[in-house]
Each structure stands twice: as structure tokens, then as C-alpha cells.
Image (tube, rainbow, N blue to C red; front, side, top):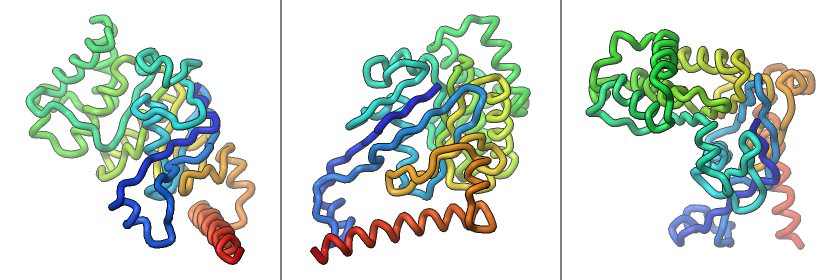
Length: 269
């Protein structure tokens, strides 16, 4: 399980960054996420949906121990990400669309390297590797150097690297960004398989079709605020718009209008 409570991540801005924020911005810091709370449970897919810049990556990197919370707490399988980061990483698989790989290694060699880092026994390594290579149709290029791979092939290697130690909790950050339909479908298959295996799955995206295909639970993130946290079915039942995409846009626009109204009131005062 992943439990996020009152998470805030604040960044200090440089002079150039403050200029880029525009003349109405007068502060020295910005909250990439601002007091958000949600829970991801085993055997379910929690989709974190939001436009670019919403705070999705900051949230997921905090869960993956790559960033420290400014305020609030994050626990993974009951372990605090700040106090017990190594133990968290042992239980976690984290996949992003911008993962670097060792171009001089083959797919087999790189996957074996990460299995060794996690202390995966030989017999379990072979079983896990073969099952994942089967699922992702990787056997034909398993012994080729990664430097010769297409974007989709590289992402498949990243998937296996992420999953080789059979983590109970998996986090996917915009994992299908820039991939063709076949490569994206492989990731969808893996997410469904992970859910069926009883794993906790957190998946961030800005694509409506992926949410419709995968989500059991849903978080709608915009400008660092969590606008919705609940089941996908409840979200659909509550929609005022005709389609999921239209409802998403409606809620984003309503949140922006509320912010503008508060700012106008403040300026008038």
C-alpha cells in the first residue's frame, strides 16, 4: 500500500525562474504539490491524472524516495520514505519514460545486473526474466546491445529492469509517453497483470484513454492540488459533462476560475 498524507513539496526559485513566472508572481518559492492526500491499495490501479506541470512527477518521485517531502508523510508498505528509503526501494518498482540505460550492455546483461543488485536468486531470476520477456515479446533482441534499440525496445528493457525483483508496489510515471501503440500496449498488459497478481499499482498519465482502460481509483491533480480522490466509477457517476474528457476539462477550468476569483478579491482588498 502507498499512503500519502498532507504532502507538500516546495521549491525555491532562482531569479530567472521568478521572471518566467510573470509580473504577478512576487514570492520566492512555489509549491509543486500542496497538501495532497491519497491511498493506493493492493490489487487496484490508482491513476493519477493531470495536465503537464500538475505535480504528478514530483509526487511520484517523492514516493520513490528521489525527493524529500517539505511537509507531510509518505509511507510505502508501512515504511516512511524519508526515514527508511532503502527498505522502500527494495519493495518498490519505479518506471519513468525518461530512464537512462547502459548502451554497451545487452538487454539480458542489464536485467541481470539489476537482479543482482536486488539479490534475486538465480532460479527466481530465470523464471522472472523469461516470464517478462514472454509478456513483452523481447526474446528476439535479448542479446543485442541496448545502444541499437528503438525507443519502444528500450522502454521494454526498462520495464523488465523495474519488475525483475518482483516488487509488491509498482509506480509508473508517464510510462507510455512517446511510445508507439505496440510498445504502449505492452505496458498496459503489464499493469493489468500486476493488478491481477495483487500488487499495488500507481500510474500517472495525462491521457484519458489510459485512465478509461486501467483505473480502479482516480486522483485528479492540477497545479499541485488534488481536485478529486475516489473510485473511477464514482467519478463517472458524478459527471456533469457528457464525456470523461469533457468532465476533466470542466473541473480543471472550474479550479482555474476559483483561483482567479480569489486573486481578484485579494487585489481589490
